[in-house]
Length: 591
Image (cartoon, rainbow, N blue to C red):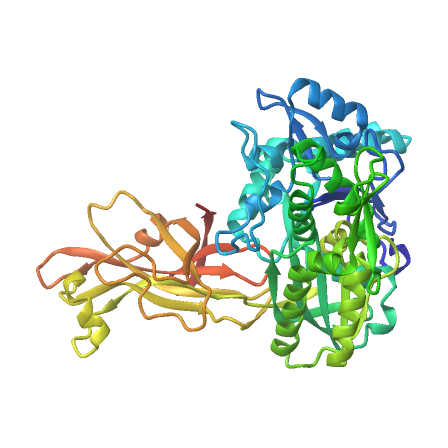
C-alpha cells in the first residue's frame, strides 16, 4: 500500500514497526520492515490459524476455560471443531470486551448488554492474551514469509515499535492499560514501554484514505473534510483542513475529534432483542441457538440489507414452516421496516455527529470520507449519501477493503507525522491555591476552608486554573506550562511533588473544582492524570526566605510543562538555575 507515495527510508539501521487495530468485533494487523535506502512497504497479516480464506481481519473473540486460561483466538473461534470442543468442555466465549475499557464519561447507551466475562478474567488480561496471540502470528508470518525471517525477528523484535489504535474517546488511562497489556504480552519489556505508540482510529483512517490514492481528487490544499470511522463498537468523527499535499500530506484538525458508542454491535443488539422476542416459546428459544441466529444475521442480512429492500431472511436451524411467525423452510422473514429499526439508533447518532463536526468546523467541509465495517453497509451508506446531499457534502468510501484501513493508516501515522495540530476536546487545567478574597461571594461560601500560608495570608485550595480551553487549536509540537510555587521548610526530606491534571467536559469550568466543604468533584470535572517529578535540584537552587514569625522556608518555584497536542500526553518539570531554564523528568500516572 502506498509504496510509490513514500520516500526512501533515511534511517541508518533496520527497524520493525507493527500496528494493531483491535476493534470491538474484528482485529487487523500490519507491519513494516524499515530498511535504509528502501521505500517502506506495508504488509498485512493475511494468514491466521483456522481461517477458511485469507483475510486481513479476524474476530476480536476468545474462548476461556473454567480456570481462566485462553483456549482459542480469532478465526479459531468460528471453526466448527473448536465450537464443538468449547461446548463439550464448557469454555466461555468472550466478545465485545473492548467496550469494557471505555472511559467513564462514555456510558453504554441504548441498553447494550455486554456479555459477562469469565470468573477471574479481567478486560486487561483479555487484552494481553489477545495481543500475545497477535504477536505470535506476526512472528510466524515474518519467519515463514522472509528467507531470513528468523534472523529478522530475533534481531529486530527487541527494538520494535508497536502502534496501537484507539477510538477518539479513549484517553491516557486507557492508553496506559493498553501499554501494560503490550508489555505483558511480550511486545516490549518494561524499559521499552515508550516504544508503544497510540494513534486514534479516525486519524489512521484518514491517512490510509489519502495514502491509498482512492480520494486523491479530494485532496485539495485549503479544503476541509470530515472523516467518519464507523466501527464495531464506536463511531469516530473528526474534521480536518488540508494544509499541504506535496511533498508530504499535512493536516490539521478543524473540529474536535468525537467518539460515539454507536457502532455495528448496536445493530446486532437490536436484532438480537427482536429474535428473542419473536422466537419466544419456540425450539429456538435458548441462548445457544439464539447466538447462532445472530451469527447468521451478522454475516448475511446485516451486510446485504439495502434501502428499498422490502424483506430479508435469516437462517434458523432446521427446515420447519411456521407461517404465523414468518418462518419458511427454517428461514425467518424480516420486513424492511423491521430491518430499518435495527439500524435507526446508530444511523441517527452518526448523522448527529456529522452535523456537529460540520457546524464546529465552520460549515466549511464539503466532503465526508466513510470507513469502517458499518460504513460498508449499503443501507447506512445510502442514508449518509442522502444526508450529504441535504447539506451539500459529497460522501465517499475509499476503494479496497476498509478492514485494513486503520492498521495501515497507523503505520503511515508513525512514519509521516502528517497531522500538525489538533483541537482540544475538553478544557484541561489544574487545581491551585488562591488568595482568599473577602469581597468574593464564592470565596465567602468557602470561608471555613481557608488556611494561613507561611506569609501570613489566607488561602483557598481547589481553585481551577486552565491550561487549554475546549475547542482551542493545539500544535502537535507545542508545550504548555503552568507555574507553581510550593512552600518547603528546612526539614523537608520528601521532594517528589504531584500535580493532578483535570479535564472539564462541559461548557464553562466553575471557579472551584470541589463543592464547598467537600472533596467531591463538581460534575463535569475528571482527573486525567497525575504528573510526578523530583524537585530536589530545584529546592537546592532556591534561596531561603524568612517568614514574619522568623521561620525559614523556601518558596520553590517551578513549571509543569505539558504536551497536549499529540495523541498521548507528555510532561516534564522546568525551573531556573542562575537565570537559565533547567528541565527535569516527570512521570505520568493514571488511576
